[in-house]
Image: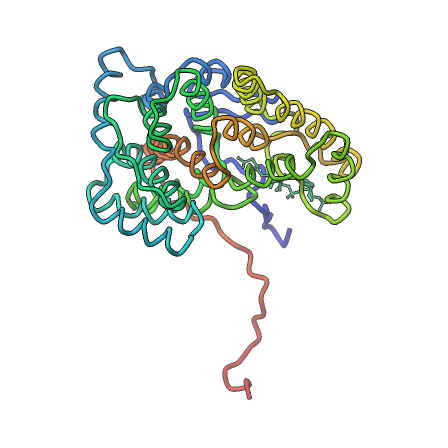
Length: 370
Ligand code: ACO
């Protein structure tokens, strides 16, 4: 604090807008999405229904849903320039989130509409995943739902209903979450009067970082590194002793267990149960318990608990996704939330422009530099 000014580093605790989209209660460990408890919406809705709910404030009627699904499916074909660009990305081995950012930028060649951004994102991610693996991209199918078509474009196989349900539960769970860093980025860009593609591309950049959406890959790698529950304490203690953060734990808002972790843990459990192999799931549960115990020991005042990313990693791995797909898949879900926030920002816009406190020198003179 200097003079009358209070500097809120990281904008912690600052309320920057009102929203009807989602409510995060960090003390109670509750998340409400457009009126629904996250677990109820996540396990029951299709991703198209959730997207409509966020964009319109109500669930769609059967007729509206049919029309929306069809319209979304019409926007799955990549613009002509996108595939050569993604091939270049694969040749240069760029990060999958960078490829998504580059690919999404090309949406402006064909449209600036919300539906085109949502419709094209899975095609870009799936095409890049296949190109990066030395395989040809698979054309989207208009007869499949959003989640099923994404799974299809990754493998060429029409997924069974359990896999589709697993993915839809994930997409719904992470679709929106208050004023997280990427959503805030999106709203800042929209508040200047800029367009949706620019706002979503900016938000992808914010989501990429390991303190936000980049955590599930490292979280899963830690579980693999541990390998056996008997080694959990030794490995995790080693990381904490070196001052490293345990990925998948801690949250700016939640001071109790992230409710999304429960929803995703349940979905992952069902998936692993059906596969007949619970080894990885059981190991992850055991790693989680050890991590929470050690975090309480090392950071007793911080109340560090499991966040959404820990079980994201487990669920997406169970769906057969490789680590580079984790954060882009998060983006595929969150794009619908970002766009809903963009609509809300536009409806009651005021330029987002906070102040800073200057702490640099004031007494320099040009002539004295020699
Ligand atoms: N492991 C070890 N220590 C941690 C962790 C962690 N996962 N998280 C926070 N801490 C410690 C910090 O080292 C710091 O300790 P200190 O005060 O002794 O220096 C203290 O807790 C506070 O940390 P901050 O970074 O100030 O807290 P913030 O509210 O910014 O943290 C964050 C939130 C960034 C998510 C943090 O908990 C973290 O880095 N977690 C690991 C990465 C992760 O899982 N990210 C995904 C978040 S969920 C999402 O965005 C979708």
